[in-house]
Length: 205
Image (tube, rainbow, N blue to C red; front, side):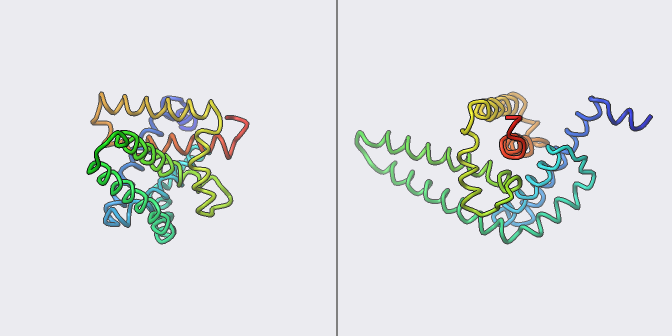
């Protein structure tokens, strides 16, 4: 009787919602535990690992031990990778500040260029750790390329990524309180699902 109840779609949906909220809480907790600067990327690696297992069909009943083990084991490596993103954000911010000091017809074009660079950096940041999870080859350069190009590699994937992002942004805009429970984990789930669809199960894409 218990097994039949657990197989109910309503139960499965509630189980997903609870685990996503729990993972969202753990991401915030461990990011803060690392002082944000040192906690952000290991927490993101741990979040991507847990979500990849959920997307692959695992029940993942040991959420907390799994999250902690990945956070601890990837702490140094993830922060080394994070230097690239911090440096990229700093360069874009500095260049944008310099552009605002300029005058002339080229300023709008320079600002547009900075916006494009910022968007591309955000895309790579969103998909980088999901790519690391799915790829058997975990080299930094390979993961960067995959994180940048996979969301645009097929029209259906692009529609899923853009449509899913737009839907989540709309939902959180009208119900901002949901950000507290599913803000980070929902966007991370979308990225993991896209990567899993393209790399782990290409036929499904």
